[in-house]
Image 1 (tube, rainbow, N blue to C red):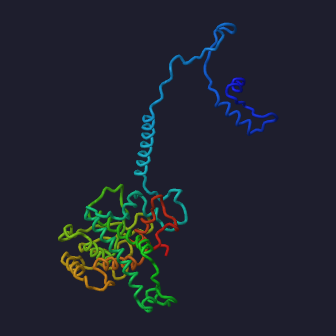
Image 2 (cartoon, rainbow, N blue to C red; image 1 turned 30 degrees about the vertical axis):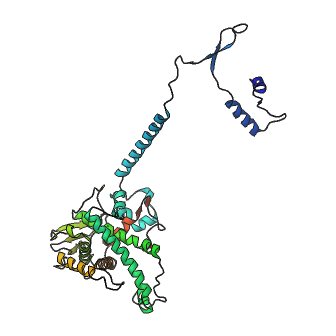
Image 3 (cartoon, one colour; image 1 turned 90 degrees about the vertical axis):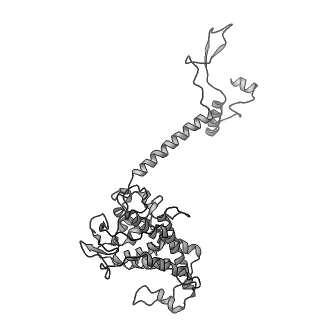
Length: 384
């Protein structure tokens, strides 16, 4: 064979004289293996006429099976990938958040308590609760969420424009964080449109979470959730402000003539050590705390705080007829968003921070596409 390679193919395994290095020897051996194919053969006579080699085509006695076509092999690979994806999706659908997982045992999660509060909730439901509504949703509930989403964004832009046009005294008071603190510099409106949209998105997601959970509890447009949703309670003032905002956001054709008054109870949180139940009485928006004080001063049950459709229509007519009002004038929807957010921020924590719907919504925002968010990837309104 070496003689045949030299005479016919002008190729030799060793191209030069002398000692051959390890690298050249390895390359030569690899090239030698590629230059021939091992076959089965037999020889009838050891020498003389008829002593040539005879190629045995099928050593096993039967031909090998034919190779499958290229498209058939690709279909088999695609079927394996599809089966793997389906198995992984089914596993993810059955998985819920566990509070005692070793992978979640880090100081950040222990401090926030997200895993304990959201135990038993499916991760896909957490993402759906805070997702942005579609552009033209056919569902009246999603239409109302889209109206609240847009109103919150417009409120942030209007606030930015208002600060740009206010005097120094008002900006100094806006920068005050404590009653006895004297700010050294006024509030600066330095954010551009992209920054405003980025910072207000967290508040839009908070309102979307509250809207979807409240609508699901009331039996309005209940979607197919994968499991139980996070539970929380509202104070009387928060409930009144939310009812006003929701009545303004709901389409006219989908508004009920009279909201049903029925008593119901909800647990604020599911883990021990901070148990409190908020019970709603016969009047809409009136809650009272049991098992310990947990309601802020001024949040005692009151009667007759429901929002009638006539008041909503009057507010809408006022907003539609105000086309000649100044640019800084808020619409009824924007004012309702602002008042509800203020009530969320004004709530005092008596026993545990998860008494607040805002803290509960912030826990839902702690779950991202790839798992728990860390302090660097969490929305800026919590870090700031």
